[in-house]
Amino acid sequence: MTLDRSPETLAALKPLIRQWGRQLGFSAVGFAPVELGAAEAELMDWLGRGFHGDMDYMARHGATRARPQELVPGTAGIISVRLDYLPDAAAAQANLADPARAYISRYALGRDYHKLVRARLLKLYERIAREIGPFQARPFADSAPVLEVALASRAALGWRGKHSLLLTRQGSWFFLGELFTDLPFPPDGDDVAHCGTCHACIDHCPTGAIVAPYQVDARRCISYLTIEHPGAIPRELRPRLGNRIYGCDDCQLACPWNRFAQTTDLPDFQPRLGLDTAGLIDLFTWSEAEFLSRCEGSAIRRIGHERWLRNLAVALGNAPPSSAAIAALQARADHPSALVREHLQWALSRQAENHEQPSRSA
Image (cartoon, rainbow, N blue to C red; front, top):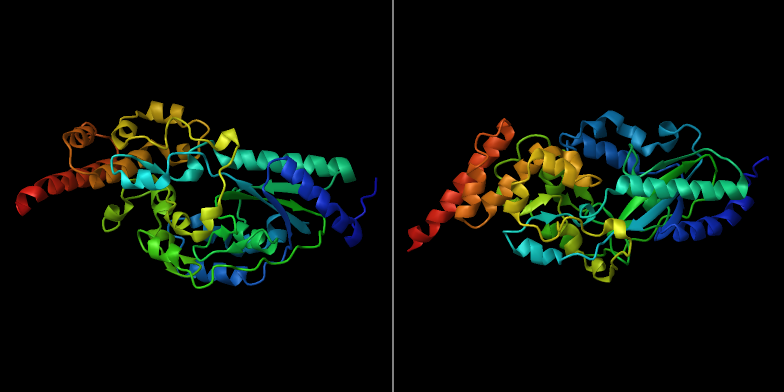
């Protein structure tokens, strides 16, 4: 079969692909060009400022992220998708307001999204191929050097918010994915931004990581510090982490557009292991074997037990003073990791300082 790649044929195929995508659970399907305009210059400026921190892979791939045809030779058109993930979980603000609880980013409460999104993209490819015959395609879901937000915005799936995430009139609680193809689909065009003069996301960032509209210094971002950063969390930022032990949602929680977000009905993204209401001390007692077993199939597993304990130690240091917290910290005082021990000592000193404060003011 000779595949008809004419613009007219591919344009007529786009509504069908959107329909098939919705049948697979995607909330939206768009078509992006392979040329990303100013995105490459913006990326190189961000890297030049060192805002990527320890994420060396960002610099290693460099401009390739903004050049889809270099990443996958032969790419002529890109299908971009959104998959809603907001779970039916305990209220985020209630967790953040309770320092004895652990706060875990909403996206990580359920199953790891990487495989789930890619699996659906493969099914989308198979459905298209049944219609038109085999073609070249490769799926991505935060799994390669791809500028997902730039592609999604150029596919009219939303606009880039001032927090640098993709944003729509229904909020930002969704994953992005892409299907790089050798089919030159006519692109949908850029979406229109609707942030206006709002700067709630900037104002509510606990660590001031959003240094300017559309610019995030990862070195100050709680998501980066608790997930990507392998070393010690800067001491001056530790108090600002509060009880956030994996990721941070504050910029999304502050965004007015997220008032219109709907929870997903996908079981895979619903909370597991009671992580939406879990206590800090309970999670801190997990052995490495328990951590690996309980986090099987979760994005949390990728940080490993050492960073898990590091993050929890900081949160326990920020918690109100209690004999239970001190006992939990002391129980791991001889942990083999110097990284963990340093954060434990910091947390114990914070517990001691906070315990003494009432007597000082008395």
